[in-house]
Image 1 (tube, rainbow, N blue to C red):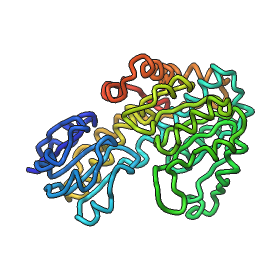
Image 2: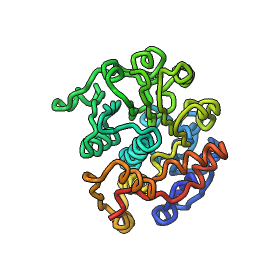
Image 3: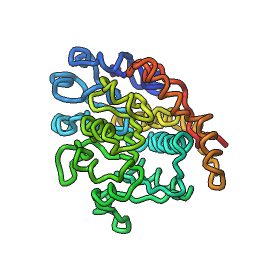
Length: 348
């Protein structure tokens, strides 16, 4: 029977995977090469780096990561060693999109920002960015989008140049993978020159990856009163973070935008079904679990901004998460014991 080593913070591991193999649950940061000597199948999140140091000379033949981003995964290594791989791409898109909307509504409520009059710049218009665009446009928020890679593959999609987007946007929301190569690398894509292009007092939301933004440059721009309201869910040196930067920004959370109950369940379902396909075995569980996901989307098109804020706060409540992070300064502990947060789309 295969041995499955899994991050203890991935939900429904026993319920879904027990018919496949023996399960060993461990903290993600404790999973190392020694542990993997016992594993045939490895199920992790973003805290475990998947590379040669972890997998060399181990029997691991399948890796599943229950998260959207895969910048922590050496996919070339997996391909060279014929190790199967699955990620939860797109699973938490609605969760992150709703966290962005909660941020915008909180800025409206706290700072009296008139969302009818702002331009929201969306950088990266994949699963998450396109969902944000869909919601904001239905609510009447003007958007401009930058995603040159999508524009190359999707002819009808119109991508605004990043420099132009920065100069015309009142609030910028980042939703790109972390890359350091290729035609459009995103590592430090928001640095001092880019911040200089922003409107005076522009807001910035980063729910992508911490190293997309140069935090030192961002701190300087805030202190110089160049940038306005800042919302950060991701940090340059996670799980470490800049405590001074937290004091300078509007909302600070410990990489939990995608942590809705629905997002987590959809993520683990994705790697479960991919593993079943890889092993050539029957999928015995996914339909049963998927049936528990409520797919009703409440219609808030005709609500006022304040009504939307109050509705979101009852469910998403990014302000509660911000207050908990500021008061405890605990990154991994909050993530490990995070409250059950349902999506707005579950409220019918």
